Length: 399
Image (cartoon, rainbow, N blue to C red; front, side):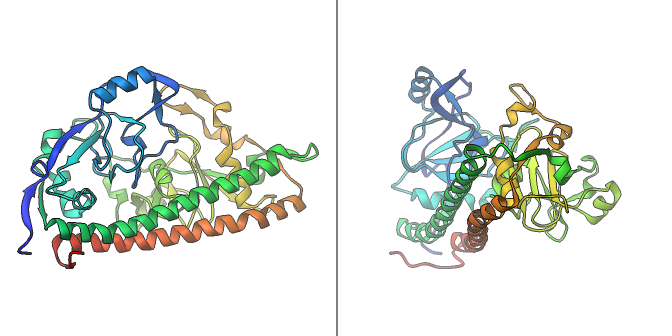
């Protein structure tokens, strides 16, 4: 550890700033403006991003709200420290103030290494325990980022450590992109078979006629004893979890105790059940990888003897459905209730067509599931290695 030295984030950064402190008027087909809500593990999700006019975009670029290549972006408001990543590729966007922008001094720190140094659990815990404030939304004040203590090795060693961890992240990113492509292929197949080439003789039924629909529950939040983060308890799905975990959901942020399930009669969701968010953020769909629970913003569609279709068909039907045709929309929330979900009409193709569609779509779903298993395995390896490399417990030789 002799070549390692103590420093602070402020000492190894050229600049620590954030995005715009005001949000310009939305402009259709304009330039993207990202907030912390759009952040994911390796970059931004363009789905649902706010767009602004070229005029407003240029103003924000000139005021420093556009990051540069190799800047480090950190979730600083709301989901504090949940996402940290390096800016790569084309930069066609500006940022809101919920995202911190750290510009590394490359003469002192390798940008890729710095991402992992900040994501190291000891650094994350230091920030969360000492620098998070805010009476409503949790946030970190920019000046406090400068105080974050780090211990870093030589630039050559930094590069070697970053290379090991980046190779794992690159594999994870490749699998995520493969899954996105596979899901788009499945959606295209669905639209071709059941929208563009739909047959007039196919009948339509309400979802409640062909599936058993249940809605999740939330125990009283004031009684913390019902909620845990213990993997031995029962996984409890929130809308946020649906946004993070992919087609097959296997991870949740929170768990409920068995006592909570019994006390509040919370419906248990069987393995391989399709779930749908229908409040706040409407239209997130997933398939459970094991028995789970959910909150009251999520509906569960269990198959029964009257179900005339496969899970691939129902998943893609719910994934591509235009939910704006169901409820009233405001600037804050799309309001759809459980009755509307249960009464949604679904076209029932004939048995021969459904069997043929299952044969075409099932391999795509199986490959996505296999990729997600690989992602979890590689992520676990990375998360085990990261603190060991950052502490020097596992030594690497410079390239």
